Length: 399
Image (tube, rainbow, N blue to C red):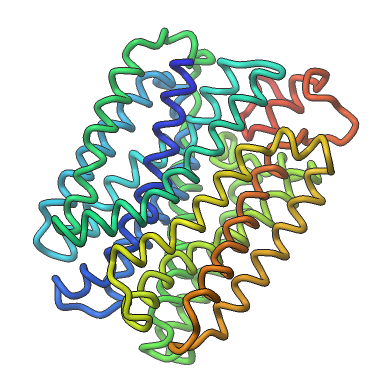
């Protein structure tokens, strides 16, 4: 239970910070006297670092040990949160936010690994159900608590709320036996080149999309960013295929379920991140809601997400996970389409219903992601290699 508690707190922190600070973006833009596109980098840099550094966290855990790396991750997350709260310049805030995301990437990757090594069989299904609920609880509470705290004490206190949670997690990790988390030390080399290529290519895409409206999507700078992204992705794939210690083992995508689930989750998270960033701005600046009121409305995205994620085990006994995930994807598309055509005069009821559809649809994606990778294998009967590949963890030996 202690292992599940540690993983749960890490996932909760990631979900909480992804939405709690979103609600404060209009306040950050006002305090620093900057535009929305500049303030958005506080959110974007977090996502970039979590994704790119997450590629290295799994290999690093096999080198230094999962328990040590978890302690390091919670410490870095706490220090980054504290520095963000006291930052007085935008560039300092962005840099410290990147430091915080470095710790978040470790927690994001090691959480599922801790559960996989601590539970088996039906207990593992139950543990993953609770774990999947953790980021959704954070996403749900983030806007409400973030809006309340930002509206009363100021947005830096949103980041300071991370400190007691990190301290509690550190006490829990300290009491875990190292062998319960560590799979075994190895001299795996870190694929710094692969992680760097991934980071640069994604950064090119983010800059192009973020600055395209201001500079013009046909401007040389934006076109160069798009080209850098396209070339970078191709070079990244070529490198990862040939690298002796690839940061991302592309062979896992030979499993149809893994490939399709990764593609659908990536696309849905891409649009979900945009919606969760723009909705607070829309509700505060165009609907005229207070930060607290906007936070309550945004709780629906995380609340319904969490409810459905926690029930994935029961739902897969009623219908196939991919069927539920497909219906969920359609719900997300419908909700996002309705929000995309909503103007400043749209009713709050419409916003609430559309947000509810998005939350329900996103919750269904955990069901597909956690299904067995090969149809026909029961969870307890899966071969070790398939099970390892299903959880995106490299087995000790792979042909």
